[in-house]
Length: 102
Image 1 (tube, helix red, strand yellow):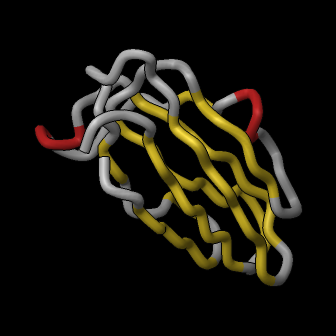
Image 2 (cartoon, helix red, strand yellow; image 1 turned 90 degrees about the vertical axis):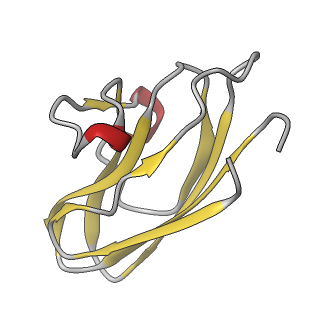
């Protein structure tokens, strides 16, 4: 996966980005920033975004109900990733990099 930046303003889910679930070991690094006031999750899905918008989402434990900048990694293989702002009117921006061969 090429490094990707996604952003969302106001409540709801951001653009969905695809992860390469075949990387071994699997590791996606994320730095999320907040401008204004927002409570957000970084969510993953096992649904393949190339076949349509994922319908089943899970909140990553390290990125649950965040209200300030956060960073970490997700090591659970998944196909899709997105920001979900659950309250507030601020903007959340996530910088996403997946380890592995490009």
